[in-house]
Amino acid sequence: MRVLLDHCVPRRFRRLLARHEVRTTFEMGWAGLSNGVLLAQAREFFDLFVTVDQNLQFQQNLLALPLPVVVLVAPDNRFGTLAPYAPLLLHVLEEPLAGELVRIESPERIVHLPARPLEP
Image (cartoon, rainbow, N blue to C red; front, side, top):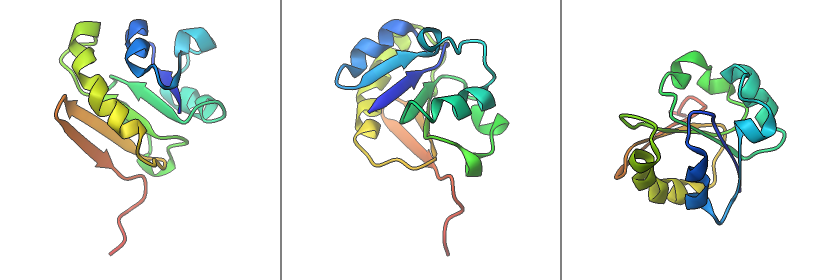
């Protein structure tokens, strides 16, 4: 899977996702883009966007996400804090993902926020 790490995720976190093609917003020259523009640009090159920006779900229309987003919900964005989240992220990367937001709320808990309203 082609994964884009947001500028707020430590670059060395990519080593924990070694089975996947991982780039950073810095490498792509997109570190200064707003989330909406960044997500629209990323959809052409990536399958998933990973961030620690917990406000993203309130800033973006989840019904119109151009690509799946994973938010690592952690007390800070240090590598040592985020590393325990990698096994669950790898699990998420094995699932088929549509335009949805996935919150990894702890190293043990995943919450999927569907991009489409649930059918009755």
